Length: 354
Ligand code: NAD
Ligand code: TYD
Image (cartoon, rainbow, N blue to C red):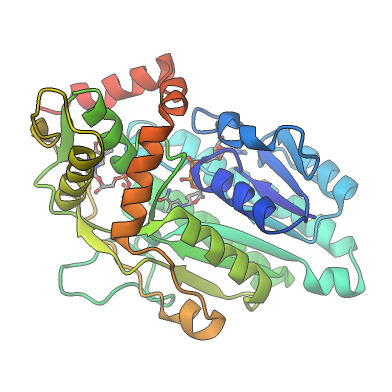
């Protein structure tokens, strides 16, 4: 069996669902259930004894040790993190606690467990740490995309905390020989994405007739990857990646934010035309920029393609269409995540942006 941390979040939940759809190997899913954790995303697994959910913190080394001893996993995939840049600007401490201190305690528990393994179990064990392209910093328009050897130059408290966790993971490989794999992925989108991030926020606001906030001039570029392609990349790296190596994962889909917003609105115009015949793009509003906003991210994903024969299946056109349709078909899921805490966040983040 394998362990997944943060498996009630956006990417983790997609990973757990896809993993159990693809094979019968059980998962222990350890998630703290912060505001971003949502067991409803996993409701289709109710009664499925291949999925064992434990509410817990990756920073709780004694809980993690106990679970490792009990279940003897062959691998741990670490998705657990605080993941939202805007929240890291408003309150960086939780990012240091989970992404840095939490990852450190997780590593200590795993190192102790791995040291006691022997033979093939020890050799074949893997920790796969899921990271982000944001650790590499911001690119100018004409600079080449990030390769795995690009220098680390994180600019936000979020990306700095992820960079720190990547360095810790690498150091446990270099110093103790722990068999680790790291993936640095570009922006994901798809089902079960919490509507504080750009794409689901625009879908949800547009459907509610609310303003569509575009930070600054909307010309910041992100490289978008459909979440299920990210999940297949992680499965591939786990199966065939070389211990100690990093693999960049991306969709070759660089788009400015404003174009993303217009694409989402056009799809909504087509799939669910507004009763008043207005276009969904009508309430786009340019608001005060994010502090320290990175201008461009782009992933060079040639290593994972060359060495592990992985490529994304979805183009941006097919992936974004599936995503918009998913949100139209899952209005209950959307309504349930828009709790009081969500509304508080929206007020805090947007009221100060003119
Ligand atoms: P998310 O915020 O949607 O989910 C994070 C999950 O981790 C939540 O379920 C939360 O409850 C859980 N969690 C938080 N703190 C925890 C702790 N201390 N112990 C245990 N569980 C905890 O994030 P996501 O978008 O699914 O991202 C997953 C991982 O992928 C993160 O490590 C993130 O840095 C990385 N990543 C995300 C993207 C993206 O576009 N979303 C891109 C590249 C990399
Ligand atoms: P986000 O989804 O928060 O991901 P990240 O910051 O990790 O890339 O934001 C994606 C881009 O969209 C980023 O450049 C910030 C921008 N953005 C807006 O323009 N408006 C918004 O309301 C949000 C949440 C993001």
